[in-house]
Image 1: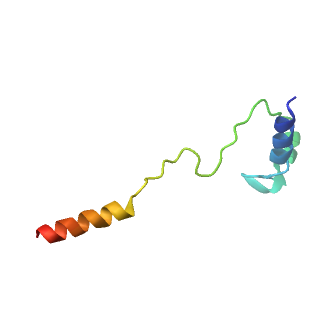
Image 2 (image 1 turned 180 degrees about the vertical axis):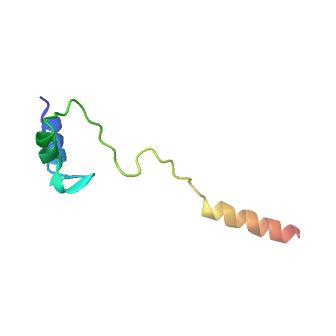
Length: 69
């Protein structure tokens, strides 16, 4: 197995199980005689496009609009 996969898998197993905070993911898997075939890692905020504002251009547009009025 790839080393990064092994590290991520171990880290995942030691985390608290989301539906029962009294046991880890590894404990839940053993209790249910289940195994992990694959997993996906999500990073907080990943894929969210942040609007890029140009504050100087916005102020210049407001000043120009105020001068026309």
